[in-house]
Length: 419
Image 1 (cartoon, rainbow, N blue to C red):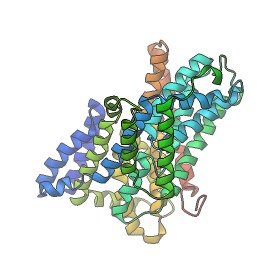
Image 2 (image 1 turned 180 degrees about the vertical axis):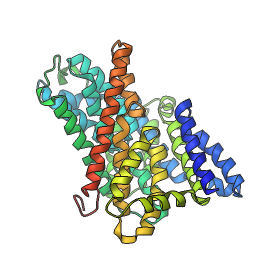
Image 3 (image 1 turned 90 degrees about the vertical axis):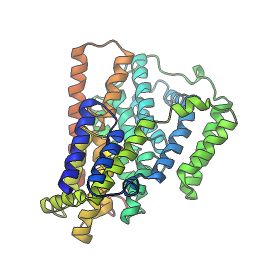
């Protein structure tokens, strides 16, 4: 059964990737069949569905669905970019910083990535800038800010780790993921000669409308969430529901449209794969993988090996939906074998950063967003899209390599670069 369970996981990922169907639904069905065959009860199988994570992610994405639906996020972004005025060399820096900020305060890499990548692409064509470079700054920024304590990935890292007996690493994993994104964004900035950016038709603050009543209330609610979640340790999901409810009562957004903005398919993906991984763990599949990796690695090579493995796995699967739920339990078992010679926080930091590093690949959601945004904003040929596919894939591979090197240098180790 341990071997069969791993083969089922590989089959589910392969079918989901080739058929372009939601892995969450496949995983739930596979978990039921696999668990039943392994002698598990329905209650034991469904125990793997993380209700706490589901409530938290739903609350956060619903709140920021309101902020997106009533135009707060878009107008806020335009105003910040307009502050650069004629200093167009600052546009790439602002695009990365703004995307990272928006991702970190709650929307996460998917919502912020879609919003900012589309915005960056249209802005690039309007200002006669390099559209691929602009989209990369936006997506890399969204990925860089994705592991904050308020974002879905940061929340997931905490909730996945608590049952394994680990916690208190929220700031570390956020800073290391942020550093990872910044390092490669700086390389892209040099590669695309960002310091020589010359744009036409810069955005002007005078041409943009002021924030309306609904948008001011939304920004105030977001500020309250940040203060109370970080400063007073309030539950992020429940507070997000409370803030969203207040905004709905104040007629700050269309409730139905905001609900439609919740990424239900992503939530099912994350929680569904979590159920399957839980079943595989109970049947002994995770132990096989951890034993294999333990025999393959040493305490010195553990971080770069996990970074490389996670980056490659992220090419064909979701970071939050597959990589994190699968790799975190394996990391815990490897740490149990090596003891204090390896650090759980270092390994999950390497896993998380390298997974997001791969997310500009056209095989992943991030790269697909860049390509679709480009084709939506400008007429393209097949040759142009193929060239973009190759470019994005090579950049993704380079980003994974950079993270493997960072892992080998001990950048992700607690007490190394960050306390």
